Amino acid sequence: MSEERNGRRGMPAGGARAPAGRSRRRPAFADRSDAGRQLAELLAPLAREHPILYAIPRGGVPVAAEAARALGAALDVVCVCKVRAPGNPEFAIGALAEGGVCVLSDTAMEALCLTDEDARALLARAGEQLQEQIDRYRSIRPPIPPNGRTAIVVDDGLATGRSALAAVRSLRRRGAGRVLLAVPVAARESLAAIEADTDGVICVEAPVAMRAVGWWYERFGPPSEEQVAALLRPRPSRA
Image 1 (cartoon, rainbow, N blue to C red):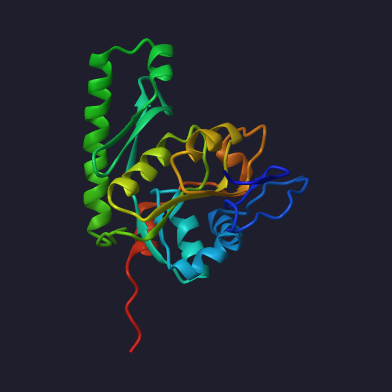
Image 2: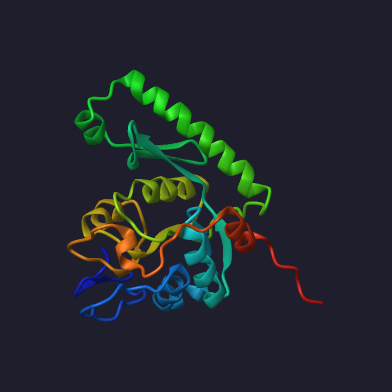
């Protein structure tokens, strides 16, 4: 289990340690790039493992790109699509990830009185969206196989944690040696729920009162597909 220090979380014993928390009168991060730089400070001890940072599109890509640049690490995406509640697309009742991974909350299903038929329809719709996402991002960047490597799942924040859990399980299924989760901010309850599925969690801020992920950023507008593509596009090697 990872250690906790005044609302900040770091690696398990022997890994990175998060510095002590601090009282904040403003958002913790200027934007996703700033969040990536702060996250990279905690990830620095992992650089010697030559990890692959797998961003959850779209919001996780600017965070992961900045952290990967600081660490000199490889960057890729792990495609995940939320299974959204009917009539409330902001509420995810589950997530699908590449490799045939499905995470679905029975509690959320029951609370919304959704039937098995409803679930099948929602999963079918999410599956189509996931395939579109895979086709789009793989046309920009060929996948980097995680076989035996240290894989770090990166997103811009963790609310319910279902997308991150699907991503972690996807990379585990695809053969990663170790799978870690790294996020700038996360609800403590969600971190605790996902931690058992990972080999470690790294988080800059783990508040008791999470509010929305965007509350922790000064600028949190969604990155455009063009911005994401530019960050993911392989850079030409220098002669």
